Amino acid sequence: MVATVGFPACRKLIAPHYFHCVGEKYIHAVVDVVGAVPLLLPAVSESKGHRISHNDLLDNIDGLLLTGAYSNVQSSLYGEPLAYEGSEADPARDHLTQDLIRQAVSRGIPVLGICRGIQEVNVAFGGSLHQQVHAVPGLQDHRENNTQPLDQQYGFSHSIAIQPGGVLARIWQEEQTQVNSLHGQGIKSLAPGLSVEAVAPDGLVEAVSLPGKPLLAVQWHPEWKVTETPFYLAIFEWFKSEIDQYRAARLV
Image 1: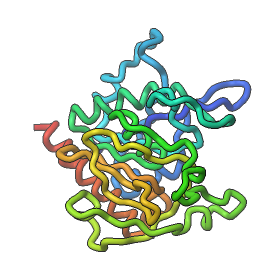
Image 2 (image 1 turned 135 degrees about the vertical axis):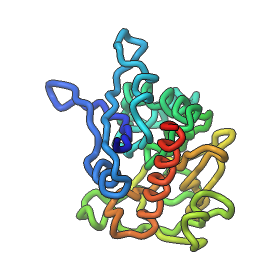
Image 3 (image 1 turned 30 degrees about the horizontal axis):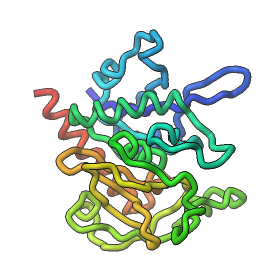
């Protein structure tokens, strides 16, 4: 059987109904590089009487990919008030991912977090977020210019310094490399147990891992034109390798 990768869905209102959605570019990256079957995990809460439990979802996947999204992780989850009006939220996705991340890690299921995904990982393990990175003294504006064509929005924006001894250092030989940048929020306090994998020139944490576990989360978007960008491709190849190892152990 082919490996299966689960994608926690965003719950979006496309009037007049709600839909559970996953960005197509993430699906293509997993299909093209990992060679896995994508499985959308609906953002329904098992605490509201639905019959789909988080354990049932995890029983059916070999990897978990946390996608980016326009919504932000709710500040109440890390004990802070909302810093500004107009922050788009997705409580249904938060309820799904916060528990799902911790359970996936406890099972040894490989996890790759992207953009919102790194923020979800940090909050799930007890960290906090800058709600507006650009408003923090000393930090740069990491948002994209959404008036530009997509190729420019997802083009290289700044360098990252890869920290020695981590996942990224094992899969990529250069100490510095270029990444895109399309986010308004970012890691404020690092969750206990997480290890910093990369930092931006302004000091913002750009990637984290969990030592001893197959988890990597990055603030940039490696799914964008992944087969054309060697560093991005190396990240998804790491994900594939971890999934293959998990499946091999699971099927023994």
